[in-house]
Amino acid sequence: MLRLWKSWLQLLGALAFVAGGLWMLIDALRDPAGAEAGQLWMSLAVTIMFGGCAAIFAYELHGMRRAGQRARGMGHGSVSGPLEAVYSNVWASLALAGCVAFAVAGVMMTLASATGGLGWAGFVVGPLAAIVFGAFAVLGAAQLRHSGRVFRRIRVDADGIHDSRIGDTIAWDEIEWIAGRRIFGQRVIEVGLVDPDRILAVLGRAQRALARLNRRFGYAPYAIALAGLSVGEAELAAAIHRFRPTQLPVRLDD
Image (cartoon, rainbow, N blue to C red; front, side, top):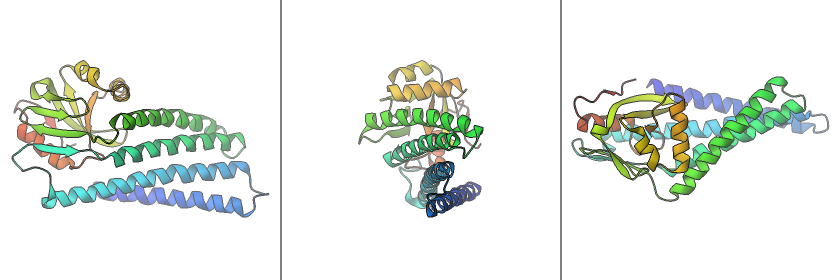
């Protein structure tokens, strides 16, 4: 319930900023001759950036609603059999669009600073946002191009965790620990591996770059992202507890 309220507050906050950005834009367009260029660029940056955030938060709320429906009897698989889940390319496309929106907003913040509308802070935040989110957009586009119309699938059974992205099963004896955590604001189930390099070797170029980036920040190179997955965290956690060896450390209550 707390996560639901948090998501609603995030969505309402993003929509409030969108409304503020649109108000600034309309105010500037009422008198184009007297409007400052910095105000125009800043209003566009705020509208685009928080519009992307609002779309992502709305999709997350939709996912929570679907997870609640599955918890009331609409889940995938039986309570004793293997669990199979599929990722929606809608989420990947939405995340890509969000990265593009943030990168464009960064460019506009830089232009706003250059025209005197934001000050020196825009020269720091703007280019940084454009570079970082632009890079994420390039990686996301490469991932979508690689996946095409083939949806990534996850299967948890007695053999281990099968991920169609790597085309192989991670056996339970290859896993050292499993834990739930947040990476860059997204809830994931992180999997500590005995031999991470084996997984890195079979990933695509874009996914390998992201895995190495996670590793440099102290995260495990392999994790199951929950955003866009056709089952909820509770269902995935139940399947892991059902099939994992009793000696395998699992922390999914964080």
